Image 1 (tube, rainbow, N blue to C red):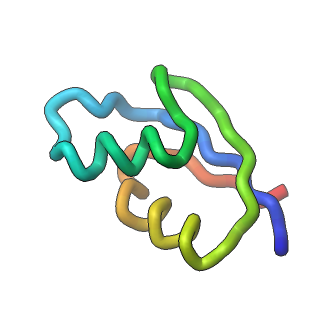
Image 2 (image 1 turned 180 degrees about the vertical axis):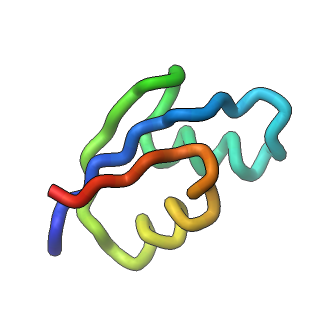
Length: 59
């Protein structure tokens, strides 16, 4: 599988609890935090659910 880099670019304040939990499950915390994950179907689904809050680049 390929690696993807996920960066939190928008705040989770005033977002539904489900989106907050998804961001936390992806390993993101503060604004600007970055994590690298394997591009699995599960991770892709999580990213799709919060695509308006994150920036994704393929490595």
